[in-house]
Image (cartoon, rainbow, N blue to C red; front, side, top):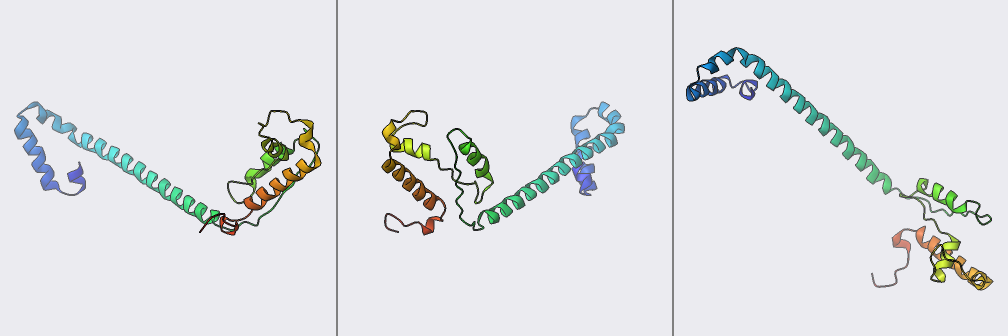
Length: 168
C-alpha cells in the first residue's frame, strides 16, 4: 500500500510477484480478489493515524504558543501592593486572604502574611500551640509587626532591589 501511495507501482508489483513466487502457495492466488479491500483498509488506517498525528501536532503547537504567551505575561512587571485585612479573632481574615491571594499578580499570587503565625514563630511554636499571655505584650506586638513589614517589603520587590547580605 505504501509503495502504491508513493506511486512506485513497479516496486509494488515486484513485491507482490516475489511474495507469490517465494511462498509458492496457490491458495494465495485466491486471496488476490480481496487485495484491493485489504489495501484500502490499510490506507484508511494510515489516514486515521496520520490525521491523529496531525491533530496532536496542532495541539502541541497550540500548547507551545500558550506557554510562550504565558512566559511573556509572567515577565510583565506588576505594581507592588499591600492589602491589609483586619478584624476580630475568628472572623475569617485568613480565609479571605487565602481566597484573594491566588488572583493577585505576579503569579502565582500574593504572599499571605499572618500576625498570629508570625507571633507563634517568634516563640518557636506551631500554629496550633497556645502562647502565654506575655506573648501579647506591646513590645512583642511591635516586633511581630516589624517582622511582617520586613517580609512584606521583601516579598513586594524584585530580587534585584533587595539589598544583598553577601557579595554579588
